[in-house]
Image (cartoon, rainbow, N blue to C red):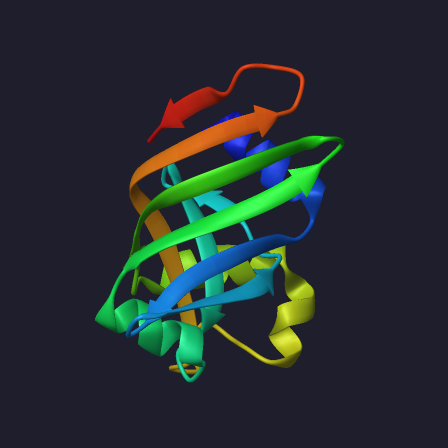
Amino acid sequence: MKNVFDFLEKAGTYYLATAEGDQPRVRPFGTVDIFDGRLYIQTGKKKDVAKQLAKNPKAELCAFKDGQWLRISGTLVEDDRREARKHMLDKYPSLRTMYNEDDGNTLVLYFKDATAVFCSFTAPPRTVKF
């Protein structure tokens, strides 16, 4: 999982896909963290993405860097612990202009039953499960 985290962190931006009914929705994200041995992302509870994940927690993300791309699919699970929210916001202090760990809006989610696939045009795919 460390290789997955490193790739996402170095890519800077990844694209998260969710479903709204039968309509796919994709948007850019940039937060990624490892906490308690799990891979986390962050958003706001008031956002459409949070509402979509509440109805269907299956998601996929994709990032591209240096001719390689990473695709992760799995279930995103909310971690409502204050320390998980604080850990993410401490890693991304610029988010504190919009969020804090006690605001009732900060949502941190971790991947469960995830499959990550590293791909490129020049090498066979490499799969990591976590």
